[in-house]
Length: 351
Image (cartoon, rainbow, N blue to C red; front, side, top):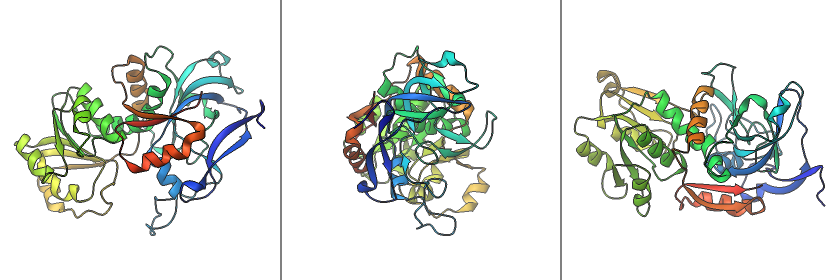
C-alpha cells in the first residue's frame, strides 16, 4: 500500500515490448545538493520512450545491438523526459524560494556548463524521468513558467519535441522570410517544426500522410503534400522553383537521396531523425559543388531551451494534444504512440 514515502512510477526493467514497462510503488527520492524534487503534473510521451524501452539505438560497430540513446541503460529506469510540475522541495545550496514554483524541466544532461553545451543524456534514459509522481532534477534545469497561459499538459509537450524542433531551426540558421520544407510533419517533432517555423515568419511546405493534412495546415503550413501521392520532392520543386532555403527532416531514408536537389545553392538540410531509414545513398558531389550544408541536430542546447521557455511563457505557440491518459494507463498510451495514428502529442496527466 502506498504511503507518503512512496510513489507510483512506470519503469522499464529490461529492453523489450510493452511488458518490459512495469508500474511499481517505489521510494520518493530526496533532493541532494544542487537538486530539487518536482511534483509531476504532466509528462508527455516521445518516440524516444519507445526506442529506449526497445533498445533500438544500436551501438558503434553493431547497429543491431540493444542499447539506450547513449549506451547501456541502468535498469530499472523510470521513463519520461517531458515534465511540467511544481517544485516540492529543495536540496542544499538551492534557493528555498523555488518551492511551490510552477516549472518546466529541461530534460537534457549536458557535456558542460556553457550556453552551447551538447546533450549527452536524457531524463528517462540516463537518469530517472517523469513517469512518476515525483522526479529529481538539477536546480539549474527547472524554469519558472508560472505566468504561462498554457495548461500543464500543453507545457509538458515542449521539452523534447519542441526543443528538438527549435534546435533544428537554430542550428540551421532558419530566418524569417525563408522557405522551408518539413518532412514527417504530423508527428510530434514535425508538427512542432511547422508551428515554430511559421511563428518565425517562414513559408512552410510540409509533407504528411493522408488524413492528417488539414491538421498540419492548421498548424501553419502554407502547402501540405500527401506523401502517398507521387514524388513529394518533385512537387516541392514545383512550389519553390528557385529552391528551398532549408529542409527540416525527421525522416531521412531515400528522402535525403532524392530531395537534396530541391535545395537552393547554399541551402541547408537539417536532419534529426531517421524514421524512413538510417543509411541513405548520398551523392557527395551534389553537396560540395553547390555549397550545400548538411547539419545533424540532436535535441537542444541550454540557450535554445531558454528561448523555448520564453515561447512557452508567452503562449504564442500552443502545442497540439492528441490524447491524455492517467499514469496507470501508461501501457495503453505507449501502444497508441507506436501506432502513429494520432496527430500531435500524447500526455500522461499525473498530478
